[in-house]
Image 1 (cartoon, rainbow, N blue to C red):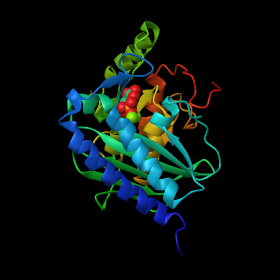
Image 2: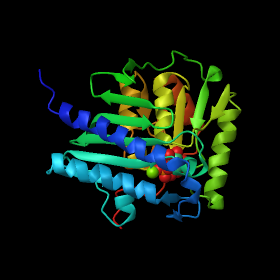
Image 3: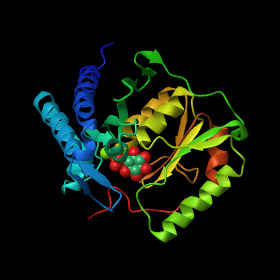
Amino acid sequence: MTDIWQSAMDHAVALARKAGQVVRDAVGDAQKEAVMVKSSSIDLVTQTDQKVEKLIIQSVKEKFPTHCFIGEESVAAGEVCVLTDSPTWIIDPIDGTTNFVHTFPFVAISIGFSVNKQVEFGVVYSCLQDQMYTARRGKGAFCNGRPLRVSHEKDIRQAIIATEFGSNRDPGVVDKVFSSLKRVVSIPVHGVRGAGSAAINMCLVASGCVEAYYEIGIHVWDIAAGSLIVSEAGGVLMDVDGGLLDLMSRRVLAANNQSVAEHLAKEIDAFRVRRDDAAS
Ligand SMILES: O=P(O)(O)O[C@H]1[C@H](O)[C@@H](O)[C@H](O)[C@@H](O)[C@@H]1O
Ligand SMILES: [Mg+2]
Ligand SMILES: [Mg+2]
């Protein structure tokens, strides 16, 4: 049976590769680039983020003129952020902008595509590592064409957990983040890591390198593509409180299996943040 979204997915992979070249060309000069800030002094954006998002959106508009977009830098520039039932490209032009600015080598282009609010395919290109992660709903997850499978570990005490500190440094939020982290470290788990890119953290879960990843404060563009890559690699997704994942809620927990996910959810202070689709 023909897959009606295959040509869109092929286009997303080609665009991610093209965008990756733009990022690779710029990374050496990233420190010379004007670094601007958005929601806080540590929420960074560069001209390369904006250039890559424009490149992707322009090209998709030419090929699929009826499709909708949620793009990180377009939203920052005032576009609405609402996930509808229409075919929608959900784009993070550089996931890991802080890494990009500091030449820390985990930088990704993340492209998710949803229809009826369900992610149909996800593409995460870790461009400095030249690793192309892809997933098509119902057809598995791959890295450079190699099938991905999550870790078999069931005991969270034998696990590595990925998380990030995020870009909100309000003292109350920092306290909650650290109190969760203290509980997770004290389970005790084997270790805690963070790549500095939500999309790459999710691909690490899908690859079986880490058992789980959680974060509060991410956005739909950080996790749309990665969420499908995790589930197609056999993993589970949920809210940090153990409920159903809501892509717009800015909270995510991805794990290799239900038992690790549920144990982790019990340790997290699941505070609420303003939703991506909150009326502005
Ligand atoms: O580099 P970004 O696209 O801004 O995404 C970041 C996010 O801003 C930060 O809050 C998270 O901790 C990172 O994991 C994201 O990838
Ligand atoms: Mg991001
Ligand atoms: Mg970004």
